[in-house]
Structures are given as structure tokens and as C-alpha cells.
Image 1 (cartoon, rainbow, N blue to C red):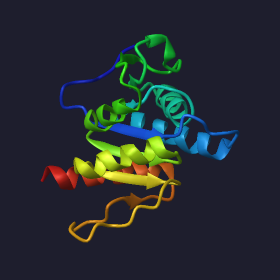
Image 2: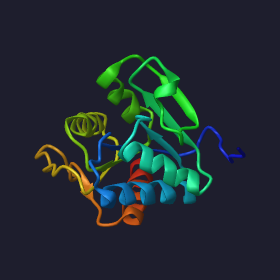
Image 3: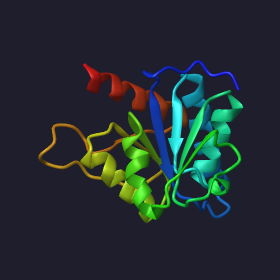
Length: 170
């Protein structure tokens, strides 16, 4: 493994369901998101398990990217095979906060209540948030920006996640 990584490397969290239930479209979307993250030289952060997380990690590895899995269990062996850096927490769903806080921006794909909790953390901590085939989140009246920007394609999701990050860093 030869990564051109330094402390300022951008980290993008990909959040989504651990069960895709035979929906190859969602798997393909997540894998393409992972590929685009790696092509843009960003680090992929996720919960490290199956489903969307596995697909995104696999996509990142397709392009030689670096993946980090923040695991709910205490066992590194629970990570999917495409996770490079395994961080066992023993925190269960509470690790969702760590997934979001470890990233500079967040892309939500599909998902159930665990994904919704991560979306909530992204909103709470004002992380740039892009949704792709996921929950519909309405803007909060107190905010000047939409709660979640939505994308139509994997590439657009990554471009938006990076673009929103650039605006937040100004």
C-alpha cells in the first residue's frame, strides 16, 4: 500500500445501510462513490461493515484509495475486507458520532435508522452533507443553507461534498 496521505488529507464519510437486501443499484452507487472519493485523493471513512460501507470501501480500493472503518464492535475482524485501517470501538450505534466527527464532509446513501442518526450528527456538527438516494431531510428555518444537499449521481455527490467543504473552509 502506497498512499500519498498527509495530515491535511480530506476525509469523506460514506454513511448508509449495512443491509442492501439484494439491491445491486444501491451497491453500484456506493461503489462508484468510493471510486470517485479515491480518484480525488480523499480518504474514505465509514462504519466498516457490510452493505453501503463495504461497497464504498471496495470502490475506493478499486482506485487505490485509503479506507478507514470505525467499527461498532471490539473486534477488528468484523470489518469488511476492503477496510485498511480498522478502529474497533465497542460502542455499537454510538460509534455513528465518531464516523461523522472523523470526516470533513459526509455522503449519505440509502440506509435506515442508523443512517438517519448519522445524518442527525452531521447536521448537529455542521458537517457538509450530501444525500444520494437516501432520506429526505427538509431545511431547518434557522439555517441559511439546506440541511442536506442532494445529488443525482455518485460523481456529483463527491463533487458536492468537496465543493461544500471548500465553501466552509473560506
